[in-house]
Amino acid sequence: MAKRTMRGEVAAVGVGETAYYKHGQSPEPEFVLCLKAILAAASDAGIDPRDIDGFASYSNDRNDPPSLATALGTHELRFSNMQWGGGGGGGAGAMANAAAAIASGLADCVVVYRALAQGQFGRFGQGPRVNTISGDTALTAPYGQMSPAQWYAPKAMRFMHEHNIGQEALRAIAMASYHHAQANPRAVMYGRPLTEQGYDESRWITEPFHLYDCCMENDGAAAIILVSAERARDLKQTPAFVLGAAIGAGYRVHSTQAGFATPDLASSHFKTVARHMYEMAQVGPKDVDVVQCYENFTGGVLMSLVEHGFFAPEEAMGFLKLENLLAPTGKLPLNTSGGNLAECYMHGLELQIEAVRQIRGQSTSQVPDAKVSLAVAGPMVTPVSTIIFGSEATL
Amino acid sequence: MSDHYLPSGLPIPVPERNGLSAPFWQGLREDRLRVQRNPRTGVYQFPPQWICHDDQSFDVEWVDVAPHGTIYSWTRVWHPVHPALKEHGPYVVVVVELPHASRVRMLGNLLGDPRQEVEIGAPVEAVFEHHPEAEPPFSLLQWRLSSSGGR
Image (cartoon, rainbow over all chains, first blue to last red):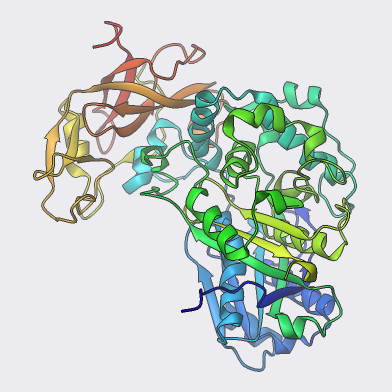
């Protein structure tokens, strides 16, 4: 029996985004942002937006496919998909679900989208305002542990302890994002560079995370359109083919709130997932030209890069030096648009867009002749997800 | 109350309506640390589940375990995200492993100076922090460095 795969069957052909705002500053309703990002992606692809027949998102996006399809005049709806759990860890998963729908014939043209206007709803980084609390959250919130930074900090702390990794490694990851944002006019932190001193002197949020180790929270929307490889070749943009993708986590990874109980605490939870992704893609870490790796917190990037095979934990201090992480010439250019730290926290979908732009040659920090482009979603949660794109030459 | 590590006003833990974790919370009120165990295999699990994860049996028992462990990881929180913690200053959260109970882990605060150096691997013992005046009353599981320097 032939090995089941969707390698090379599907491509990302259109990307779209609204302007990116600081959180609470969107002048428009979240649903309008979502529509505008989808229309921008259709325009970028050169397709009629009514031809989109599938919608995929993640992290309980509030803008549901039936409402979008109705508003957009979608001719027919064939795929309506939500990736369960994991918050930003579902970003590549939504892309994978869209690609799987196309590869299997469930739909022909699927848009992956994420819209956030937290000022109009609630913020991620605030504790619960309730009198009593039950379940997993009751095991952490009464001890003052009630935000993502606080839940994930012990994972990074343990990993850094086990492998003798210093703060400089996290600093290099933060500085790479800020460095690349200075070339990207879309970036919220464009024109606001970060120095080593600026990082070192920034306040602690929760050890080992300084302020600059933590993602922003933003308003905006982003969208990516996928179609079959065959159709992609007739459209106006250079296709970014999906080589491989995977979703999941290892053994008994607990909910975020009860994450302290996860047997493999010091992990981003890509050990099993990255292996499946590389197997499908038929490439390995040495083939990867450029990486977008979701920075909820820099410690998660550190563990993700290790678990994607770029270096051993013991090599982290040597590898994670700023010059190694910068486009165009670094060993492993990382987060070349500025990412969640400095471009925009669009829950990582902006990282998926950047991975596509690198294949097209359209990044503001382009890696010359990038052929294999990796986009890692939401480390340290469960499920996580990861996807790798290739140019025509990789097929 | 000065004998509480964090100020009042944080969410009060209560068992779920279905009572899954009630033996744990009731145990803390009685100065007991109770954890689920599989009576057939002796495997412990925490947080509580409806089913034993190792043999998929719904027959799960609650047992008392010795209230001590070692620090597996930690963080010191400086940026408060709840109004009750504004102006409070830093506090330490520890993840504690119970080597004598299938290495299950629990979470709490490390009592003492919030700016103390925290050492992964250090032995700690449980402190049952009672809040009888709260509505509803509850108890938390806190930790302090073992006075004996290990057991």
